[in-house]
Amino acid sequence: MKRGQRLFVSLGLSAVLAGCGMERDTHPTAAGGLHASLTSEVTSEAALLVGNLTNPAPRAGNGILRYNAGDGAFIDAIAPEGSGPTTNPLVGPCCMAFGPDENLYVSNLFGPAIADRAVFRYNGVTGEFMDVFIPGASGGLVRPLVLVFGPDGNLYVGDVGAVARGGTAIRRYDSHTGAPLGVFVATGAGGLSQPGDPQFFVFGPDGNLYVASQATHRILRFSGTTGAFLDEFVTAGSGDLDAPSGLVFGPDGNLYVGSTTRNTILRFDGTSGAFIDVFVPAGRGGLTVPVGLAFGPDGNLYVASAENNGNGSVLLYDGHTGEFLGAFVPTGSGGISGPRALLFKEKMTICHRPPGNPAKAKTISIGYLSAPDHVAHGDLVGACP
Image (cartoon, rainbow, N blue to C red; front, top):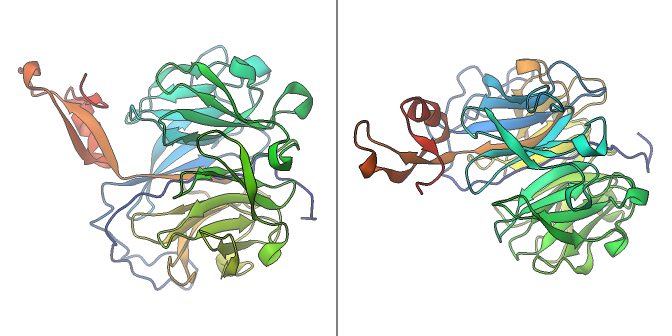
């Protein structure tokens, strides 16, 4: 891919969840897959969600796919393409986030009209469609992509619509009602003005907002409270950075960035932005178009290798050395073909209601993959009222 050729939907959303390290067989098979004995008691109750989007949309296999975080086994499509409202269903889902209410929020990127490009809400356990949380065009929304719940609990939405239509901004919405709270990062702030931007963004350990600008090959930093532009945290070309998309702060506090046209993962100092090293060299393990990045509960790095021909997969790298450990989710598993966003979910808050004694209901935290059994027996997703 040539420099300057933007990957319009090549962005990844990832979550770093605190957890104990897990024992993992770090010897890949000759075929490059994970060793057959790979298991984990620590993550047996955790799931990995993958935003799978292969153009053109609609397309079979597109949707939010769910996998066991211990062994990568496919579970189901929690929010498949075509789900949602019957009149304007989900088309081209890319990115997702769990909200404070423990439900799953999904951006409808490729709705046929602006009014259809909304943010949908699904039950975080069953995948049942709940409602259109943010209607298309609400607060000026043109084309929603990345979804991040911020430190203030509100929902931040990356709008990659055409500049002429007021897009290319980060908008903020009330996490309880979905009401627009205004533009948080405006079009043009810090040079963020091209269609296709902003790509992935994340709140850092300092509370500020870090945004990947694929169009200008930089990582921009904005105030986490006001949205004001602070500085170029990573300058264009640093470490040969080109067309950044996914980025995540690691357990070591440093910033890891996918350079999509170089097929590398770069590491930068989490305080100064200075280039440290090429954490994953070009093509290691078949890495092609690295988009979504996430550190798992085991401390290792998971990468959405999006490819450009429908052969994408989720690759696994040692979180300390960057060595390739195998294909955690191989091409085709559960219909995966164009992974974009990665999101781990380890725990679930539910309202436990003892059978026959609802007055004794109490809020508890359980392993995420145990939640379906609880819901089936009458428990509710989220904290008790």
